[in-house]
Length: 96
Length: 469
Image (cartoon, rainbow over all chains, first blue to last red; front, side, top):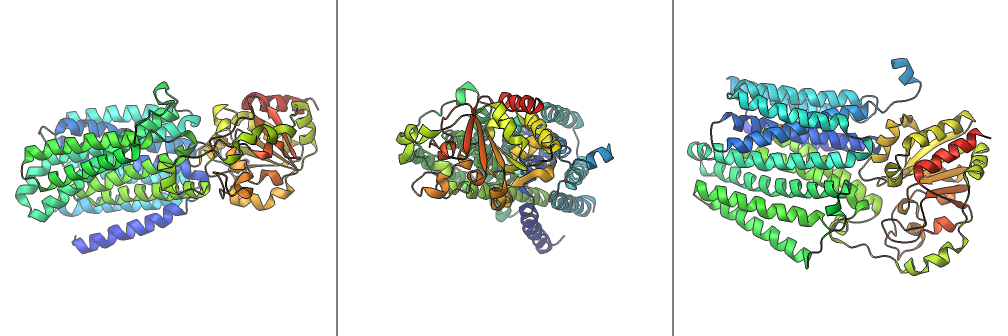
């Protein structure tokens, strides 16, 4: 993919992302933050690749895989747990 | 073909899923789906990365350990302890970035150097240095924040460092100096040691930055460190030129910055003031006894009577509600008032609690309908029609001095105007000041009554008094 196209895409994501995040209501700011913890675990991709090499650095990569996976799994999971708690009365009984 | 086209495409798809997921976070009805979108994006990105890899025994082992640690934390954590957990995860993110950037330099550095022109190498080394700097500050800053939030003995009192700000500035300069040295160095070996030096200095800086910051300013610190953990990930994305890291990292960075701004605005303080400033107790501190001369205290029975005739009741929770674990008792009392025909709402100040949105999660956990959770700006205009406002474990966010005394340290801070309600009941252990260290004239106002005691026990007492009516 041409670098210019990618650059535009990345910038578009940044602008769009800022607007979308600003629209999250204060009601959900805690789950937003824990969800962001999960997203910052994206470094897992690089940690996995680095761990795949047989080099002196791979011990660092192993530790990074543990931390990043902790973030991804823990972050998404606890966000899910929190979001499930938000409901309207009446509707909640209908769903169960 | 495979790794040059399909992998980047899947990464971009993951980025799109992240953004759509965030869009769904705009409403509690769709937010669960939003989180699922995010998780799906992450799963796709990880799977497509795995296809190319070898040494699966290490990969599976590392992923398993991480998943068990993360999963246990996610399942076991109490909702009152969410600030600590987010703080800890911020640290994980920062730590992972430090390690990954270091590993990439050791593992990939020479390959990149050999295959690419000078520009590629400089970009990569600059990004590595930034990852190390931001990541290490985030990791250690977050651990200190965690210790403070968890109220570990070590962190009760910040240790004193003379000329703290000068030392911080020097540390930052030294770290940047090492970074320039590393970027311009020709030797692989020297770069490794210099990176270690950057990480060590940045670690000390991280501890020093968060060490002096007090409890009620924690929402700002947690939001800021959340942002840093994203920026570190984005910097790591530049190390290996990976777009999905750059996008996801920027999203996290943007989110943290947005929340930091909201928190600072809600305290009418600049970020610099929160991080480096010292709150001075206002000139009124000495006159607290005088101010509190007319304080009236009340009993559970009197409050029950008052609530019996109330049409509209508003609860104003603060960190004290979390400490007393009183959210379930509050929910019970709220339901009883509703059963008697009253309208119940909850007024949430943006900085109530120890992290953004903390009170909302606690009340949602107690099964309070989220439609009843009102933002400050939404409820303030109608505060005059509230019969009874019950302040539970909040202090500075309802202090009218913010409106009336321009010399007060909280001057100009937006507050919840409970003093405009017909009757205000303040549930508190004592008349001690809040974080800002100033007395609160609300406690002595004509329409205010104090109910002294532990938050949970106080509410339970009111509940039984209402039952006996």
